[in-house]
Structures are given as C-alpha cells and as structure tokens.
Length: 406
Image 1: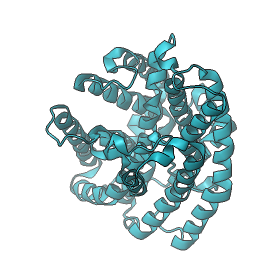
Image 2: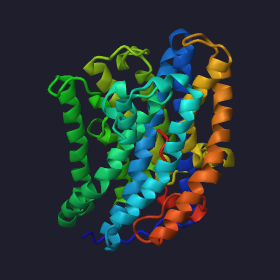
Image 3: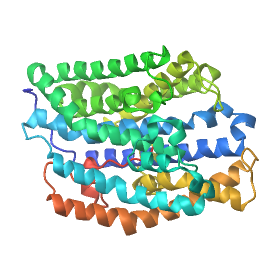
C-alpha cells in the first residue's frame, strides 16, 4: 500500500475543466474517424494532395482507447491510494452494458434499413457481431458497420479489466506506485510481443489478430499509466510540473510524429496489407501521438488548446460521440447512395458535411431518448456505489465517465 498523500476524485474546478477537455478530445477523435471513412469511400485518400493525412485519421481509435484506459482504470488506481474496496463487479458490468448495448443494438437495426448490402450478411456474421467477436475476422464486418471492430476490442478490455486490475493491485501493494508503473510497462511489452508473433506468422491464419485486445493493449496501458500518475501525489506533482512547463513542446512533437505516420513509412493509404515493419511504425506512432495529445489535458496544462477543447460545442459533440461513432458509417453509405455517388466516386466534402450533420442529429436523439435514460436507470439499480457511476448527462459525474466511440 502506497504511503503517498490521498488524491480525491477531481471535483475541483481544475478537475472539471480537465474532464471537459477530454470530452473535446473525444469529439475530435470521433470526427477524425468519420473523415477517414469519407476519404476512403470518396476516393479522396488516393487523389488528395494530403492522402496520408486522410488515411491516418483513424488515429481517433487510438485516442478513444487511451481515454478508456484512463477513465476506467482511475477507480482501481485510486483505491491503492485511499484503501477503498475494489469496484463492485456486478455494478461495473451493469453500467458498462447500459452504456454500450442499447445504442449498439439500435444501430444494428438501423443499418438493415440504411444499408441494403447489410441484409446479405450471413447468420455467422450477425452472430459474431451480437457476441462482439467481429474484430477477430475481417469477414465478420457487416457492410456499413466496419467500424464496430473497435467496439468488439473495447468490450474485450471491459471484460479483462477487473482481472487485470486485481493482478496489478497485488503487484503494486508490494512495491508502490513505481512498481505499479513497471507492471503496466510489462503489459505493454506483452502487447508488442503478441504483435511480433503476428508479424512472424506464429499464430493461426485467417484471423485479424492486430484488431484484438492483445495487439492494442498498449493503447489502453497509456491511459492506465496516466491514471496511476494522477492518483499518486508523489508522481503527479513532478510529472505535472514538467508537462505544464512544456505543453507546446508536447503538441509540436505529436505533430512531428503524426507527420511521419502520414508517410508511406507507416504503410499504404488503401486497403493493401502493410508489412509488419510498416504496421509497427504506424501503431507506435499512434501510441506516441495519442499519449502526447492527451497528457497535457490530463495533467492540467492550460493553453489555448485547453480553451478550444473545453468549448461547449466540442464538449457537446463529445457527449454524443458514441452515437456519432456508431451511426456515421451507415449514414454515410445512405448519403452517398442518395446522392448517386459510387464507391471512390468523388464527393468528399459533401459526404463529410451531410454525414456529420445527420450523425449529430441521430446521435443526439439516441443520447436523450435511449442512452441517458437507460444509464440513469443503471445508476439507480446499482446505487451509485464504488462500482463507478455509468456515464450520464450529469456534469459532476464526468470524472467517472467512459464513452466509446472508436
């Protein structure tokens, strides 16, 4: 058990502002994923003067996973400081299900209407999606819902987290926060060993291993490391002092690394499979960029970027971003079909504008009519105990929220 000063949950004005910034980051990540899909479907990724930029906007997935790692691991990291009991697993399961399942089922039904091609998917594909196993095989992607592979991976993290947190708690109890960080580094190294096994062809063929939790666990670990740093005063103070002194250096470095991954060193811009080396460059670059972009907001650096991220427009989009993530691709298919635009048949900007507008409308309806009421029910059902309140529209709950667009 660490002897460091107890850090309370972020109820202060600074903590509230930090969490508004995370909402803003979530909004930008959701729009980035939408843009990369519009670039692909319109063919702009192959023709644009910035094809690498459009192709790499899927970095939004890495940002979502880092945010999930940070927000969901915070209660576990805090309990090692204040000695509170572990989060209740039943409450955790109910709240995670209330967060993800209703809107996800709604989009499955909606896609059958919006994307006629989805009706041709076989029973195996639908069963895999209902069981959240679609990340395991490319053939299990439903037309119009290819983005749901990351939801499957997120669910894997939800399932693994309580057990991983228990193991890490035992390690940290014997060595304090620094040993905790070393253990998390070990998890990240394990993820890279798994990726190496995939690259060397050591795993069974026919599976999309790089879309599964073991292959992207290091993205979640980045967020978990930030949660440990924030929870331990002995770590937070020195790290935050450095970050607050050089936030623009971090943003500049993130921009430089992102420029590298927009080149072909990180792989092709189309669906051509990258080499293991190219895939590694891309994955590592996404890891570094996501860490550098999120860290200033988590540790309280205040810049003009902070004000932009905490702007009411961005924070609102962040609030409904799960719905944007779910609905944008089937709506994009429907928009392009309505406009008579074939795949790769131009129309990038009209696709982005119409899809974003429609996605925000549908996501808002989903949030207020479906997601928020069910999450409020889940909070009442579980009593708002240490299992961690489910995300909801209340501002004072934002430190415990986790929303998954990916």
